[in-house]
Image (cartoon, rainbow, N blue to C red; front, top):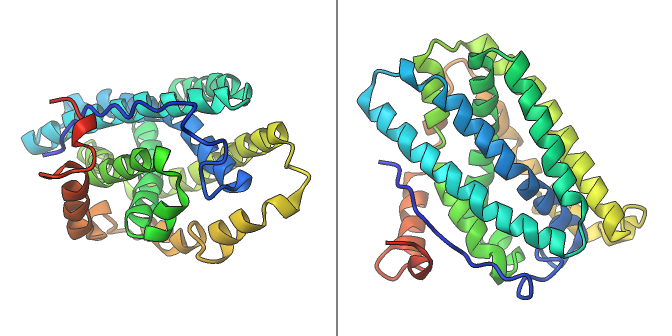
Length: 276
């Protein structure tokens, strides 16, 4: 069962520092850019699954779809609050980013067949799943996040890992094949990283650090060189191209059990923020 948890983090702009990722403008603008893409992106994920769920016959998968939709809706809501804080920190471009992403995804809805839209979701869900696994398994990454936002990212990572196979299983259930899945991953990767880079660059312009590479040193080192939070995901990313790939091939059961207990167990850190 994939639970829908109604969690309200009550993020306060006054309590969230401007550089909430390792005190570094490079790392913060990268993660803030990612957050700006979440609300509209996750709405696209939900829509791509909803429009084909009538073709799913397996009762267990139909139940998992309900949990997937519930979790993604909560993610979009809470990241929109973080995005409002980003705007309050002086990033007036935040609304423009969301508006333009909405237009790009509306274009995708018009031109792509439904199965291809679902393949895009499978590709991006793979990104979020391996990012989530990496975060939950690495205390260094968590320590880099300011306590005011750390629990938001931990919760999001937990739930991305919990529902990582749902869109993929729906894709297979409706006849999605290997070539569509892998070619879609290739163009989705190119578009996703181009959009992320453009959004981050725009945010760095606002921060007046784009042309000051000496301000990037710590963030670039940690993200790409050592500990290489992003670079070390390459093998897991390439795993997607195996013909017999399935998201559950990466066994995260023990990791998720530990984090469910940490966040929502008897003494869970987020129990006071979750609605009954």
